Amino acid sequence: MFTGIVTDVGLVDEARRCGNLLLLKISSKKLAAECEISDSVSVNGVCLTMVKKERDCISFEAIASTLKDTNLKKLKKGDYINLETALKVGDKLGGHFVLGHIDCELKILKVIPRSQFWELTIDLPSRFRKYIIENGSIAVEGISLTVKKITSRSFSVNIIPFTYNNTTLRYKKVGSSLNVEFDHLLKKK
Image 1 (cartoon, rainbow, N blue to C red):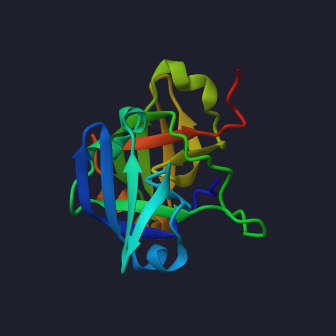
Image 2 (cartoon, rainbow, N blue to C red; image 1 turned 60 degrees about the vertical axis):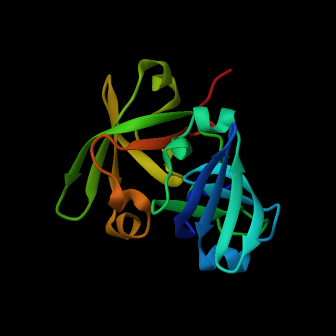
Image 3 (cartoon, rainbow, N blue to C red; image 1 turned 90 degrees about the horizontal axis):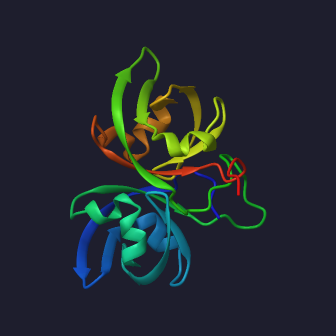
């Protein structure tokens, strides 16, 4: 379980397919120092198990079903990714409960710079409309955000300068694919 508060922005050193498996090697001095093999790490919002550690790099394996529903399949060497270590008992819960189980991949429709923040408008297929409310929580690329506005085809989130400058959102543009996890407290059976 995670909070949606990004610990570090890592750099993809290697993204290699091996059959239906994606092998990811990520440069992150911070997480290489903090994590151990078998730890769960949020990688762009996706809960993955760290399988290898060497110097300043950490490695993961992602299987076909994970790749199908996430933007991890599009990663390539040189891409930046959001990383978060798993929540530990006693840690501060600064965001909201994030499981790392991505619901869907959605596209950015608009990036609007405002005077003190950025507004991102993201597409919202009708089948997901029931999982989102204004002023509710949502995880986008593993980042805990607040839904500000909902229309019949999209929703918007506001990004403060700190979040913009300390996550991969600064590299995203119209058409970029985002991993989205809806607040599990809103999901109905």
